[in-house]
Image 1 (tube, rainbow, N blue to C red):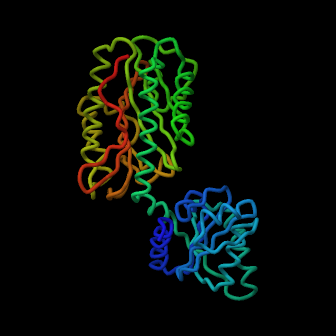
Image 2: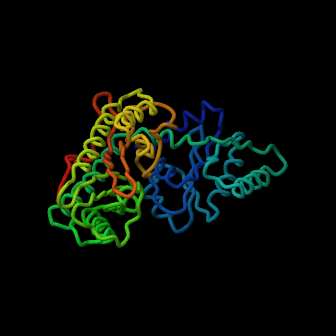
Image 3: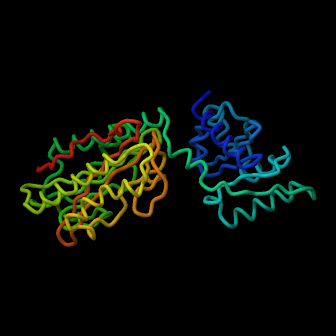
Length: 367
């Protein structure tokens, strides 16, 4: 059985538990997760009796045959309506749908299609499955972890090459550094950067998600780099903060504090750990040093086919960690007008110590 087929069986079990005859999966990343399909138009009608149906349009007939060889194919430009009509024809009485994906207009259209297809008979009931597939995606299998390792290795190597070649130096702009880092990841095999690369120097480093601009790197600046590579559809995420030239005492102190908090957060990653408690393990270190107001975001998030996915690790999070979850740990201290430090790793929760995927040193680097 393929990985995709195994995942469909897990969703099938969930659907059966909820008394559903079928689930209409329309989110493209969820479709990819369950089938392997990477095109821009595809949907899956997953049936509890195992007679699944994959829908796409004529542009992707060959691709679907290659990527989804084990699911019956329905080719129709109106992919979702066609699958809905087929669900009625095949006797589905309760159909799950992704309510967080389907728009209000889309739901109204789906209801009309089902009513028309029922032709005066019993119209199937639509039931939200909410984020059922995303809950499955939160726990990674071996293939997914392998892809994450490759993505993290590309990011590690790209930063190492830029640092060794002197590309991170005073006189360059944030935009120049960001574009070169992106280009290096692509040259090393990334499909794309995981997100818009953050390069923030000097006072800009105190802005958690600063967008690179034409600010020039200068001696004595903190330089914060938050970036990642996408490999085989999976994203890496890493932040390193370094100093250009000479590190001032306050910079070393803030860096040491964030490093201590980050180590505490990593150590708290364990099977069964409450995500709020994991956040607190790191946040309490920063608060004890008087910088509670300078750590303004959650500790981390899941990472996989999306750069931000379940679980969320923060004061408002919910749930606990499970083996196989890939998460970030990224505390920061941001001093407006002066500078900020963030240190971030991607890790996988295991029954033992978490597996660290981003291997770039976390010692303070002074270039």
